[in-house]
Image 1: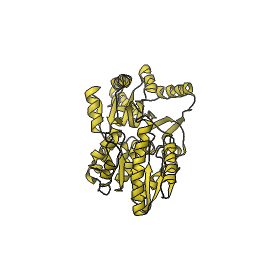
Image 2: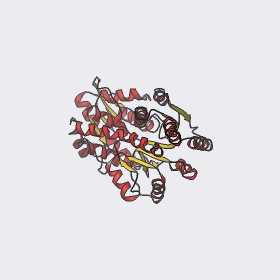
Image 3: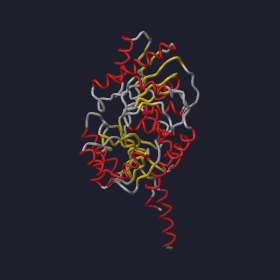
Image 4: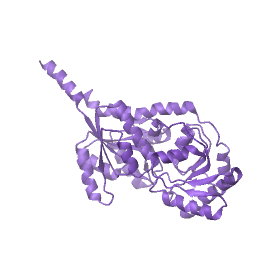
Length: 379
């Protein structure tokens, strides 16, 4: 009888739905984060069917479009101007969930923030497990950043790291166990190969005020625009400016679009289209894509399109190194005519298909590790 009760208890536990609280840079119409969110939810549906996900973030048209595909997901909206109310919403969610996950991106850096520290501190205080999926590590030079990172890595349940440099750094500096090398979640995104090459150059600048001085940004962008203007005149191409992050990047792209129109005898246009699929279409159909945004470059490389990576961060360098591509200007190089010409000379190179396929397989492991840890107590 005891044996039967034991078997019943095991079956009952396995039938119970687990609940995940999911957080990240979502709801801001950022192409990369929207793609990673879609990949996380799709792969969870494939690998962990008996699950509930509660995502806490701002709302947007893209977010609603993504979440509408997944019935097992419940959206709790953060109110952008009410931090106290947001803390209450967050605490209520994590109290009733089995684990809290930060999904994707470079979430440890002096410039972009430290691992959702202001919210994960509640997980630590309430003894509620939290983890990171498919993340990267950027520049960590500030003492405060290092202390926060150490606290989070010492108390997290696990982390999957998207690149080898970040992985080795974390292992060496902060933690030895429950940290796993995978690859970027965006490798799981399925992109249609259908495209119509159109006569335009696409430029996607990023707001780089956290990385460079105003004069450095102006010099960097002016050098890029000078080079692009030469290509546009030579090949009779229009120039389009597209913000990949519709919130953070709009002003810098609009300003450069106006500058370009006023200083070069070339037709240009500023594109403000928040829709995920529209941004992807603009990237896919461009003859050349010059971008300071990682996932814009990822899409170009996945589709074997002509792109030049305008790196400002180790994460872009790491991506190009992973796929054996040289069509980028490293972040530690000056963005001058010589370096831009050098990167452009490789613009038609073919992506390393074998390496991309390998990274796609390891990207699935992000969710495999999540499944392993969320059901660890039942095995």
